[in-house]
Image (tube, rainbow, N blue to C red; front, side, top):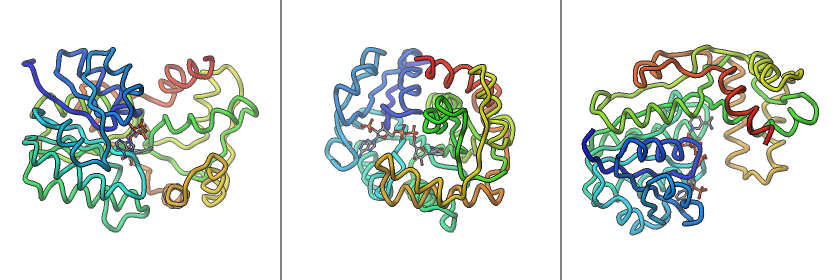
Length: 290
Ligand SMILES: NC(=O)c1ccc[n+]([C@@H]2O[C@H](COP(=O)([O-])OP(=O)(O)OC[C@H]3O[C@@H](n4cnc5c(N)ncnc54)[C@H](OP(=O)(O)O)[C@@H]3O)[C@@H](O)[C@H]2O)c1
């Protein structure tokens, strides 16, 4: 692979950390946008250059993006994502970025069931209208969200969540990151939109059982109403927008909105997507053991 210049936003998050370190390990010249230089230090240690900046500061984005051929655009899910992505797209254009790999969300749709779904659809439309080369990756629900249930898994052997008996094509963020790396470093997927799922559509009973196997103890899923699952997050200081989005996602999932899988992870990465057992054994259980 020739020396490529790639800039990654959301680089200190779930997907972005792995994208940044994988790119650096492949010899790509990679710049990681971080809000805080201390949080960027592990990425620097992995071989990236850290640019301190934020989506609120357009000039910091232009500085971080200048000299990059490709931007991996990962934003946080929040009420301001529209404004943040608009600023990032404008900065990418003025910095002369050629291509954007966008991490979107499953079934992004202007009429979709959650504000996150609708915001991602607007960003996808703006990206397509920008004239820049692009790849849109829409991940399904993340296995890594289960970290929020770790306290009750460890204290009671229970996962409380609001998706009823629904099945979903839940995906591991490691597979999302792997797909981003391939999409950013080859032109094979340019212009495409891909829905990234796990290998199977599974209900939370199956996920709980996988976690139980990995931890060597009984773990059960206890369904609660979508409103209750969302409201419980307030205890952790979660804001109104997030509470509403979680409620709306849970309601949609409970109706079967997420009951699908695709071949896109394997098609892009060349490897099978990781399963609930893989996630439980390789990610959650080691973290639980500290
Ligand atoms: N969770 C799911 O199940 C799911 C499913 C499908 C799609 N998605 C999408 O995935 C994306 C999130 O990916 P993720 O889980 O990898 O991210 P994450 O772990 O939530 O991390 C968010 C990243 O964005 C950075 N960030 C937040 N606010 C910022 C700001 N104002 N300026 C600059 N950087 C900022 C954070 O930096 P700090 O470290 O400084 O906070 C962090 O690097 C969202 O777009 C979401 O809609 C999520």
